[in-house]
Amino acid sequence: MQIIHLLCVFTALIAPAAPKDKCYMHEQCKNCIRTAGCQWCAEPIFNTETMNRCFESGTVRCGRNYIYPKPNNDKYRTLQDNNFSTDVLFRPQRVQLKLHVGEEYSLKLKYKHTRDYPVDLYYLMDLSASMEDDKDSLSKLGSKLAAEMQALTRDFRLGFGSFVDKVEMPYVSTVPEKLQVPCTLKSKQPCAPPYGFKNHLKLDTNTSLFSMRVNEAKVSGNLDFPEGGFDAIMQAIVCQKQIGWRQKARHLLVFSTDADFHFAGDGRLAGLVEPNDMQCYVTDDGNYTHSLVFDYPSISQINQVAKQHNINLIFAITDGASKIYKNLVGSIEGSSYGILSGDSSNVVKLVRDEYQVRIIS
Ligand SMILES: *[C@@H]1O[C@H](CO)[C@@H](O)[C@H](O)[C@H]1NC(C)=O
Ligand SMILES: *[C@@H]1O[C@H](CO)[C@@H](O)[C@H](O)[C@H]1NC(C)=O
Ligand SMILES: *[C@@H]1O[C@H](CO)[C@@H](O)[C@H](O)[C@H]1NC(C)=O
Image (cartoon, rainbow, N blue to C red; front, top):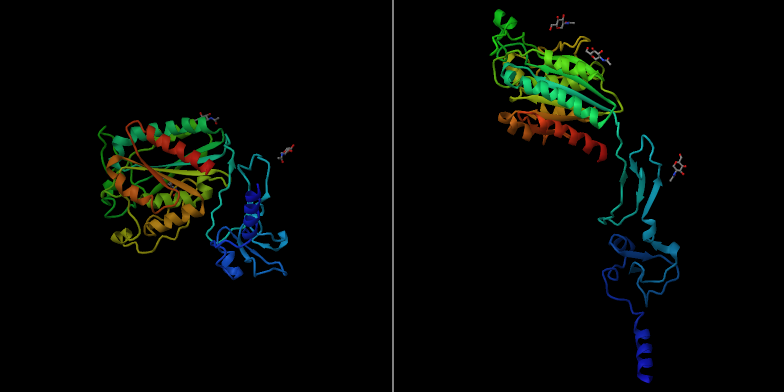
C-alpha cells in the first residue's frame, strides 16, 4: 500500500518536465507554427523555466485565446452551405481552412447528380474521300449519340459540321474539274466539291433533323493525307452564335476522322503565312470564309480557345490514326479520345463518360 502510494507521488513529480518532442526544439513562434502538430502559447505570463511555449497540441495548459494556430476545431469552417437547389450541385460551396505549411486536411464534398443538366453536343465530321468507308458508321454514330443523350438528359442540343481541307494546292487539287468533282466514290457517285469547314446544323433539340443532316452530308475529296480539321475545330469553338452554344450547358465537341491533321506552319505550303487570329468567320448559312486567309491554328491556340469557352473535345478516331491523337489529348485540357470501332459503341460510351465526369467532378 505504502509503496504504491509513493510511486504515484513520484510519477506526479516528474510528469511536468517537458518532453523532448518535435515541438520542444522550437524557440521561435514562426518555426513552431510551421510545424504540423505544434502550437504556440502566447500568454504574457508564462514560466519558460518549466514549460516551452512551443508544444504538441493539447499537452500544455494555455488560455484558449493565446494559442496559435487555433485548436483543431477552428481549422475548418464552412462559409456558405447552400441547400442543394437546382443550380447547386456541390456542398459546401466555400470553405475556409487554416493549416500549417505543408499540412494535409481531408474534407468531404457532397455532390448531387442532376438529371436533365443541359448539354450541347456538336458533332464535327471529316468528310474527305477516305472517310467513304466510315461514313456509314459515322452516320450511325450520330443517331446513336442522339439516342444516348436523350437517355441521359432531356435538355440537350445536337449540332453538326464537317470539314475537308483548305481548297488550295497542295491540300486539294485545284484543276477546275477537280474542284467540281474531286473524286468518284466506290458507289460511282461523284464526290462533292471540297471546302474548308461547313456548319450544317446549328445546335438544335430536334434529333431527327440531326440524323437527317448527318445522312445527307456528302463525302468530298482532297489530295494529301492530313486534313484541315483544326480550322474546323477553331471555328466550331469560337463561332459561339453561329453554332449556338448555350452559356449554361456542358459543351461537348466530338471530332471524328481517320487521318492526321494540318497545324500552324503547314499553311506556308500554300503561301498562307498569316497566323490564325482565332476569330469567327462563319456566315449565317454555315460557310467558313477565311480558310484561304489564315494559316491553320496551332495546338496551343486550340487549347486556349477550348479552355476559354469551356469546351471538352472528344476525338473519335479510326484505328490507324489513333496514336497522334492519343498524344494530342495531352496538350489540350479536358480532351479525350477513343478509337472508332465498327459499331461506334465505344464513342457513345466515351461521350456518356465524359458527360458524367463533367457533371460530378
Ligand atoms: C433547405 O431549403 C428548404 C426550403 O427551401 C428549407 O425548408 C430547409 O430548412 C433548408 N435546409 C437547410 C439545411 O438549409
Ligand atoms: C424535326 O425535324 C424533322 C425533319 O426536318 C421534322 O419533320 C419534324 O417536324 C421536326 N420536329 C420538331 C419537333 O420540330
Ligand atoms: C455557302 O456555300 C454554298 C455552297 O457550298 C453556296 O451555295 C452559298 O452561296 C454560300 N454562301 C455564302 C454566303 O457565301
